[in-house]
Amino acid sequence: MMNNYSFFKRVQDGAILLLLSSFVFSQSSIIQRTDQGVIDYEKRVIVGKGIAKIQLSNTESPSPSDKKIKFAQGSAKNRARNNINNLVKQINYNGIPLGEFMQYDPTIEKRISSYVSSAYQNGEVEFIKDGNIEVAMAISMVGLSEIIFPGVGFAPDKPKSVQYLMTRSTVPKAHRITGIVIDARNTTLKPALAPRIVDENGTPIYGMNNSTRGNAINRGLVGYARSLDSPELKNRIGNNPLIITALNKDYSGSTNPVVSLKSGLEIKTAQKSFHLFDECKVLVLIN
Image 1 (cartoon, one colour):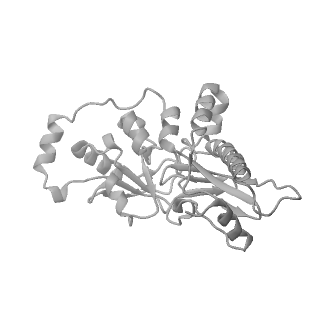
Image 2 (image 1 turned 60 degrees about the vertical axis):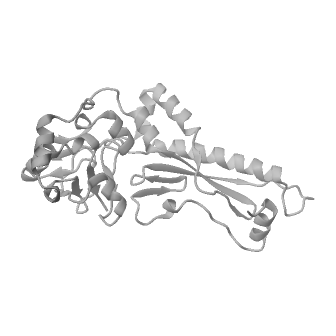
Image 3 (image 1 turned 90 degrees about the vertical axis):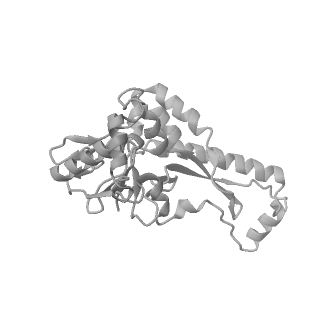
């Protein structure tokens, strides 16, 4: 492994080493970029960037001591955590930024701040250029959802009904619906932590009350993607999802997919037969 001196020397020679995790710059992710970092709703992570300068004295050689590198890394990490805190405030709950939650509930703000303090280093880290160190730190939306989601309003944890098991067994495996895909790429839909699917009359079809709290936290109420190309999506929607095209209508700040009455009935029928909502087997495609 490269030591700190060699690492710094390569930069002095004009080589820039950038080892941030690939998803930060992934073009396939639904991400919101700012100068402070990124919010990735597809991979459900928030990444903050922090930059610090290695402090050299006028008489010191261009190769800083290990101690000064570590000090700069620590400063960069703290700035990255501060930036994560700022990014969290911008996350869309359901047409409402989390910053508003934090304004009116100091307890939530304190818990989020504590959670951010445990942010992990994203990838192999260091980016050194002209004496600056850039570090990426990250937190998962799983822990954030645990803090933000209410303790009530979710479906209870309970075993599958006998009727469901009988229905499932009578339907050939090739014909079983394994998930719900809402194709909203023709709309201006924005990703959110707690979206709902509604019909064109505004009647809710799917939301928190249809999923257990544990699944909503760990899997996300819905998944987000730009296309169905990724094999990883099978973990959520399986091999035979019901695909519905969203209407280009707006409810609650463009966060809730809107479907036709006919499509809403199709979703309800699939849910009744295969209990797809229990495990959040719902994916939304957006641009």
